[in-house]
Image 1 (cartoon, helix red, strand yellow):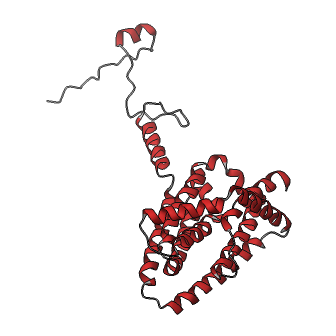
Image 2 (image 1 turned 120 degrees about the vertical axis):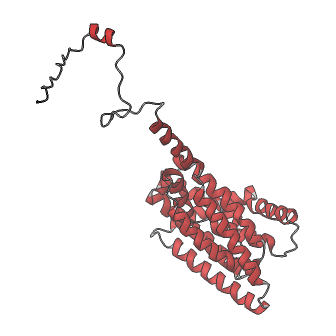
Image 3 (image 1 turned 135 degrees about the vertical axis):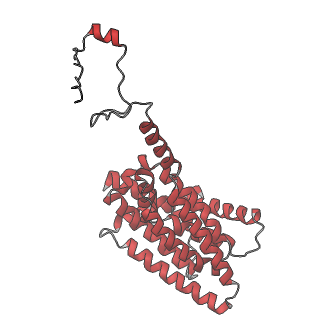
Length: 287
């Protein structure tokens, strides 16, 4: 006895009309339905919320390059302080002389990176006049003395270490380029490299100039942090002409730091800082 043949019930497909839609109720789109490529993501969707959260997290860690650089200066200074306690005076003297010669060499390379040195010399003269009138060096020395008193340090070279390291760490092309890259694109690679260099330099400087070098980390944090936060408005500083002018003029300041380290002269380097501003102005409007 065979199985009776099963008949498949006929299914009538009705066209979607306003009448059918009203009888069937609102049409439900499955949650797993894929959006069309290129379609706008709704403001309240989980994907949009995830993107906004990621962007907020990236902005909250905007100063990562500067923070790493600040930590490197502090770590290098602590290592240098520990090593300096075990160094005889003669070794400290020769080490200081080596630092002075090395600093002069770096400064000369920067200063001679531009073929035309006349603008750098002119900016240096204008910067010196402005700095003397504003007494910038006196203000930096006062800040160093205040930090020394606040930290209750008895180091005789505290102010010298603070001023020398501060000017060395915040004067140069890597400061400008690295800070703007970190602030504009989130790429802190240049500042990471600078952190390594500053950390090694801090070991040498702190072993001879003392605890004041460690406080130069505050200068790094303030100057580089400000450049990073203002990166959107300072992108013109990355133009080759502007960067070259600032590098050449900054190189002269680095040479002055080296001369001070060698005790060849006592140059008020703080009063030369406005020269960097004049260099940027010259490159933008006069170059």
